[in-house]
Every structure is written in C-alpha cells, then in structure tokens.
Amino acid sequence: MGIVDDDIERVRTAISIVDIVGEYVTLRRVGRSLVGLCPFHSEKSGSFNVREDTGRFKCFGCNAGGDVFKFIQDIEHLDFVASVERLALRAGVELHYTTGPGAGKDRKRRQQLLEVMEKAVAWYEKRLLEAPDGRAARDYLRSRGITGEIARQFRLGWAPDDWDTLCREIGVADDLLRDVGLGFTNKRGRMQDSFRARVLFPIFDETGAPVAFGGRVLPGSDDPAKYKNSSETAIYAKSRTLYGVNWAKNDIVKADTVVVCEGYTDVIGFHRSGVGIAVATCGTALTEDHVRLLKRFATKVVLAFDADAAGQGAAARFYEWEKRYDVQVSVARFAQGKDPGDLASSNPESLREAVSTATPFLGFRVKRALDAGTITTPEGRARTAESAIVIINEHPDINVRRLYASEVAVFTNLPAQDLVRMVERGGNARVVVATPVRQQAEGAGFVALTMLIHRWNDIAPWLIEALFAQDTYRAAFRAIVETDGNVEAAILLVEGEARDIIERAAVSDFETDPILESRALLAAAVRRELAQRVHITDSDEIRQDRQARITLADFNDPRKANDAAVQLLQWLTNRTTSTA
Image (tube, rainbow, N blue to C red; front, side):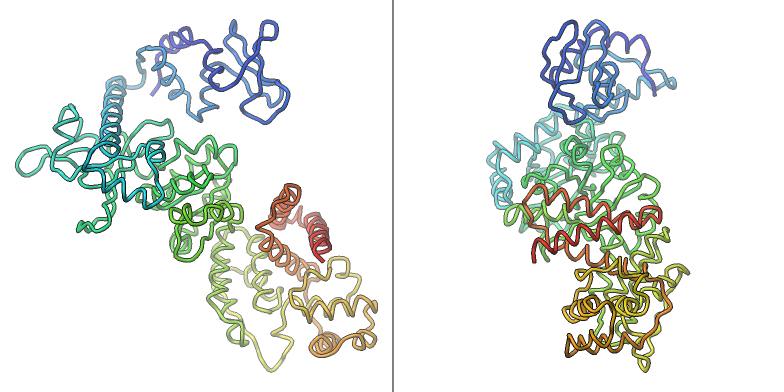
C-alpha cells in the first residue's frame, strides 16, 4: 500500500526538518547549516549537519543522510510509510493511498480502530490509578515492586469486575468494540466487556500504537485462566507482535542486543533494573516473524525463558533463523525458581549479569545434557557424551559441531578426535568406551600431555599451564616442560597421581591431531576463566573479556582459528598471570 505522491510532498512542505531534528539533537548554527552531535553514532565533535533550505541532513562521520522522512525512519526505526504517517499526523495532513480500490478505506478503518484502542488504554489506566475498585489491583502491583510511576510508564490498567462497564462508558460504537476485541455480544444480545477483574497490560506495536491487551487475574481469583490476551484482529497479530518493543527499540539498537521474555512483568522487571532492552511474546512461542522484526533492531537475541523446553521442538528453526537473518541466539540463566520480575526486586544486578553472560543456544542445551549425566564411570561418560553429541548434531554447521565436540571431550574425559569424527558423520551418536584398555577412556588433557612427550614440536607452542583444569595435570605439565620432555627427569619432579599421569603418557600413543586437542583444551579453559570473571568492574578488563568472547567465536571459522588461538592464549596468559 503506497501513499499518493502529492500527499507526501504536502507533508514535506508542512514540516520543518530543523524542528523535527531539533527534538532529538541539540543544534547550533554554523553559517547556513545547523550542526550537532550525530544521534546515529558516538562522537565528541559535531559532524551532523542540517540544512533548512534543502530539507536534508548529513553526518560526515558515519555517512548517515537523507530527508526528513529518512531521519524519522532511522531515528524511530520505522518504514517509509509509517514515517510519512507520523509526520502527517503532526502536520494535520490527510493521506490518501494508492494500492487497490479499497486501500484508502481500509487504512481509514485501521486508524479508527487504533483510536478506539487508545481510548480504552486511557480509560483502563484511569480506572487503575483512581477508581476505588482498583485498590486491590494497586496493592497487587505494589507487592510485585510496580509503583504508581512504573504503572504510568507502562500505562497499566484495571478492568472492573462488571459485565459491561467499558462498553457503556467509553462512548464507542459496538462494531468498533467488537472489531478490536474489547467487547462481544452475549447470549442475551447485549454488549459485554471482554476483560473483567484483571490487571491489564496494553500491548503496543513498534510505532507506539496500542493494538491489544494482556490481562492477569489477581491472586486468589477463582478464574482458571490466569492470563487472557486479546484475540487477533485487523490491527493485532500475535505472531508478529512483541510486548515492549515500542519502549525498548532505541536501547536495543544501541546495545545491538534484545532480551526476549515470557511475560509482561518480566519485561517491566528488566526495565526497572535498568536493562531497557527487553520484550516479550504475547502468549505464543517465538516465531520467524518475531525474529524478522527483531533483526531490524539488533543481531543478538537473548532468550530469558526456559529455552531448554523451547529447544525440544524449535532447535532446528532457531539454527535456521540464525543463518537466514544473521542473528545470534543465546540464553540467559537465572537463579533456580526465580523469574526476572521477582529478581527486579530482590537482585536487580543479576538481570544485567544474566544478559552479559548469556550462553549460545546450542551451548546452553549441551551444558544441560552434560550436567544431567554422570562421568564417574566409563559407561556414564559414554552415555553423557552420546546425549550431548545427539544435540550437537542438530546444528547445520560442521565447524560449530566440531568445536562443541571438543568441549564435550574435555568434560567427559574422552579423546576429542573420537567425538569430532562422530559430529563430522552426523546423525545418531554411539560412543564406545572399552574399559580394559585404559588409554581409550583418557581425555583431551591426557592426550595433550602424551603428544607433548612424543611430538613436542607439534603441540608445545599451543600449550600453557592454564589449559589444564586439574592440579595433577598442571603439575605433570610443569614437570614435562621444565625438563624439556625428558620423561625420566620429569618423573623425579612429581609424585602421586601426577607421576602416574606422566608414566602412562610416556607409553601411550594417539593417532590424533595435536592442534585439535590443544584447541579443545583452550576453548574449555577460556570459557572456564570467563565464567569466573562475571563480577569484574574494571572497564579495560571488561573490554578485553568482551573481545575474548568474540575471538572465541572465531574458532568456528577455519580461516580465523589459528589467529584466534594465538590471541586467546595471550589473553589467558595475561589473566592467569595477573591473578597468580
């Protein structure tokens, strides 16, 4: 659906680009231009220019530029039609549409429905804040940490426990109430309110227009339906709507990250905690339309709900969406039994930490499988590895599968080469651990020490002490390094299990890739170190840790893996040296 060209020009003529930009940017006159700090990238000296005579803007720092419609598109993350409509509303210009004989009529009807929803939002909001019958709802919200100020910010409302109060008092035609799902005709042929005795959460689209409601009963209610959402209408489609995106989109763009929650109070909880990048699905699972919408604002999607349950049927779709829309899906983990709405009151900082330490979606599912297994027996290690490899093999990228197979090898104390072969073949995994031959059950750490003794030149440059998680393996590594691989001399430097490790490594042999084994250790060691550094406050160290996470992802690319290994070894050396 297009807008008539003449109407677009009428809007352009009626609007001053200086006035519009001035609402977002502080401008000062320099010659014939007005100059300020660019709103589209960080800068300290103004390179953002606006010209009234040409109706154009241009940033000489980031190259953003265009007319007033383009400015509104970029600053508010709207499409062209929506930007024209917003400015037309401000200028009082009536628009006409070009596609189809009924396009203009449909657009006008849509505008009517949005106006009805706005009236309903205001009516319910006032009922919550002022009406005596809204006291119980106000008390409930306060018990959840939602003050009057927050209720106003999110325009929360209260639907009274009555049959038709809204329909009678709002002053809207019955057909419009039905079309937006606010009322229906009951068996007696009378209009009845769709929402009764519920706290209401207005749902807005990305432009800020109200399109639906989500309603929650108060504790102690005998209504079996805890939540009730608006039915789908001409202005509301659940699979394409995200609660909170209208408030969060600017922060999402700045952070290049969006948090997807399960419920409305979770979104509010994140915002209360200073994490203004949260949205929620409206009673549905995350859909491709949701991802397509979010991609307009960010490339990183953090799931703040039970992603393991979602992953049972959606894993393949998630991986497909990651590739198709070039997004990264990860999972935030919270204290057991707590949701973001509760944590906003008891431990708001944990919400920020949960987002910053979110685990890639596949990594989250693999860790769940590993934590659920046992590694106390050879058979237990085999079963645990099998369950993890089955999950890993769902991922379409063989390089990602290889990387996670190496991590499973470190966790289960099995040779990385064996598990990597399984993910290269794909399909169902079957791990065989033959207990009579002890070395078959050895893990990546032991394999690396064996190769250090027998193939020093191939693996020594890629090993440091911090790669070994266990003290006995570290002691064995130090002894081998200090004696330049002389087994007899190394054995004299240690005792107990460390000596046993060196003695077994001296007579063992593995036909495996030394680089693969060393990188399996490196990836596990880096993740282990990062997990222990979530409370770091030094800005320089935070920046270095963030870069380490980015570099770790480069292991997925064979072209970057070698340089990534060098950088991560240096990072790990610096970290472990500074804390020694």
